[in-house]
Length: 253
Image (cartoon, rainbow, N blue to C red; front, side, top):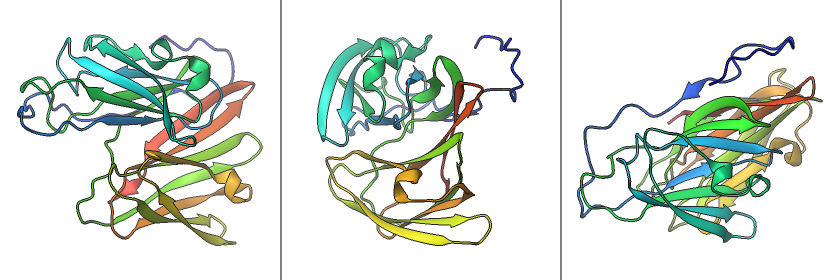
């Protein structure tokens, strides 16, 4: 990361991390299923990311990257690369930067040979906007169909300079039904929306502004009766013509 020498009156640092734990001591057996890693890119201009593969696979593993459009429900492009776990990969070096906004990247190892894919491993993702390094999180797998429930929350903010985006991961095999409950900090309203993630949608991405949420701040709560889906909230903020995003997985279980 380069030193921030900006003279603007900005908060420091510009990015914080929520990456996966060190798990490089246990491998998938060669007869076990390989879990793809799914990375969301909300509808933010010039959004990009660095990927670190060292918590997911060992060196020189072939990984297939697919750029997927969740609205048109189709693969836009795909590319196979050899993993270099000593370096980060910039997603805009794999796919065109202009095509990342609002889309999804799915990463899948080509082969499970045993002792080449880490059990419980994840790709770590460091987001960028306009080449400014912002927050980092780890990628998610598809939502499991094992019986479970989900109740998670996170803060949101909407004003002239801030937008909030919600991303939720779907299942490969079944629709995921959930509720999105939004409560503002002044106790002036509470709204509940019902949604379904179809199996070919992969990740559902929502700009809270499109739901008619008024300006302000508060809590967004995910409620799911039959699944425990992964979800992430992005807050984009514009400061003196420079764009930043904060990113965190929604808290709960």
